[in-house]
Image (cartoon, rainbow, N blue to C red; front, side):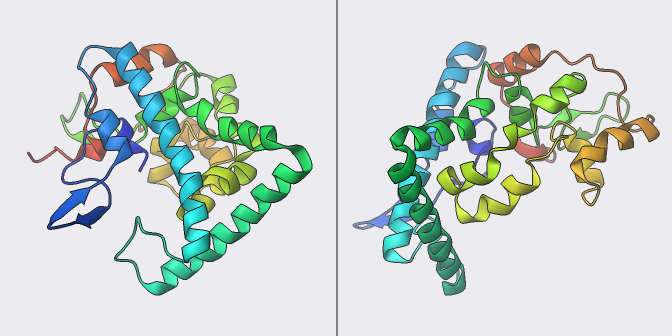
Length: 248
């Protein structure tokens, strides 16, 4: 879902609906990404921010639909058990939001919505980590494609990418049921060590920095990454997601 806003993907993206005699594939993220112009990072970053935040808002509305109907229409081919679990989650989420609205007003929900989205878009520095996850970089020594990357910008940057300890509440507000576990797991320090995380997924995120230190032959050392240059590169010329084009 997230990568379609910022990276090239093979095949049709998004749920397909039958409208009359035609099948229509709908994708908010892909619609925004298709408007990107190579070499225009500011314009592309703005389009990314608009489509990303709009999609997150639509997910909130989708939770209401799922809570009422008992089905998640974005996944029409999933088994009934999936829809039952989605409906259970969405009903709980909608109840929590209604309670927050009653106790603290609509601004409390708006605050959580911004907490979920603003760190992921420019010019927030944490955006550099988010938009480079699962890119397609070429190893200078072997020439092979590397399907992910880490962002090494110092200890303070590692702390900055901890998502402000609001992920559980933000998940109830903004995420679909399939993203609940992801948000809780990634709410700790260390999400910028993304390559290390995929190489050793069982290591707690807050200890990935130690892994990088004890295996210097596999991970670049130092903290020389410039987060704003990273964002400029990503939004100037988008890459394929996770080496999808490696054999094209």
